[in-house]
Length: 471
Image 1 (cartoon, rainbow, N blue to C red):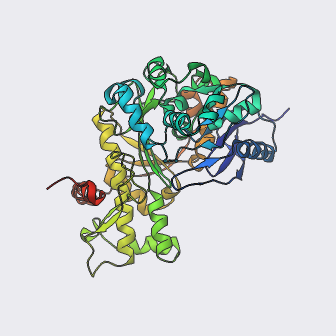
Image 2: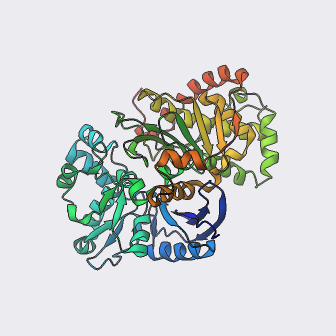
Image 3: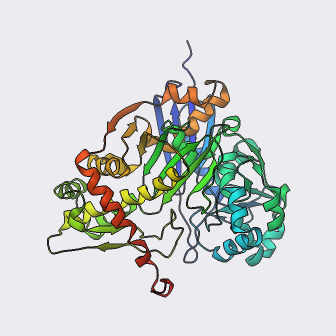
């Protein structure tokens, strides 16, 4: 009897490609990764050569050593791949973390109006999104702009090279700022206001139809967030709080993102903090790179609240709920009693408070949740899991497949498209396995509720001096 051909997920990330082959029971059969470089030609710029994605994807798929039954794609969102009429790349792709488009964001909100933009797209104009990049090209590289005939996002360029098809899924399209997220189609109103030709854009499909999704939607599906209820909490370099929504409901102040989810007929609200596990990595490096286990043991010696020491995790600015690239981090409340362990504990708590900022906005949309699904490198720390559970007031579960991230979710989408599963719910039920659960510490909850209120008072003082409000 012939062996079952695996389902394969391919995640086209910022630092490299990850490929995973799984069985229809969710067993991870083999994995492969290939890295590539990031170009920063000027301060605040971030670019990559799409050819690097394609070459790395070919190598990673080849390294799996198996003929796939189907391939699903996920990838970094928002990046602009500009193509000419022969599908040739016109310039390096401008990535999600590129910051050059501040003027263009202001122009978009002025042209469309803030309230109308949020009503249509679920978001305000942020430098990471795709639409501001197009306006930047029109202003600063008019010859390149004039040659554009097609626009794709990173993973969809890989799809083009694999299949010859120009297409996109509704989850990734939601992050372009050109998409009517409620109606799940390109927004003619936004395109007209920004004078962007509709024929440049690929046909948009539901994620299960095309076996593709932006990395956050795919990652959430991969830990079992296929419906309203469970919450995805990512404790990676950045931090994410992700909740599925039964209907489109944008935050009027656009304090978080609202996109189409990978499951047809659902949406998701997502808060993103820029320095989560990245904050601990920064402190680790600043302390001379001691063993992480020793640092975390030092932190465990301190009580919740760290005797008044607070950490603001705005080392790279902030995205949710402040949308402020100029915010800065700080330790506040230092005393002679505070040692290395106290600094570490304060960082763990400050990141947890930043995640709660996002959760509070999600709750303000009327989302009810009773459990979080935790993933990311920070989730390996038992202490950090206990702190985050207690700050959020939610039990946190981990799944056997969480370390495989968005690639695993893409493999599930491949299974739905190929007919191995009837729908996303069946894929999750068959493949996602919960392995452990961390409950909030009852003795810590009051201290962390009080600590969160003190944390919220930090942000206004961490704006640049010239932008502080008048007393």
